[in-house]
Length: 124
Image (cartoon, rainbow, N blue to C red; front, side):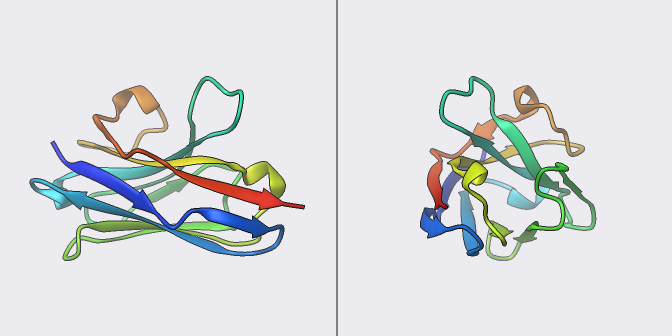
């Protein structure tokens, strides 16, 4: 399986932008569908944000972030990026990247590899 490590989190103000990166190591990164999830304080489940297919030709976004967040990947560099614009206090959470085989899914249970998470805090 692929190993994942997120970076780029931090403390920002409402309206700011932030770019999260996820570096993958291991075998065949390009064979994995990638996604970003987040887990807000007090929430049991992780919320799907965005997913991208193996080639990058297909993407899917949650309504809560559509138009503000953009997912992309670079298979040559084994990285997936989440560009976050116009951040809001309700975006405060720990952000995770995740990997799975086959099609994009919004179901966290289908993802086989997870990073350790990176904290994003948005102040009002």
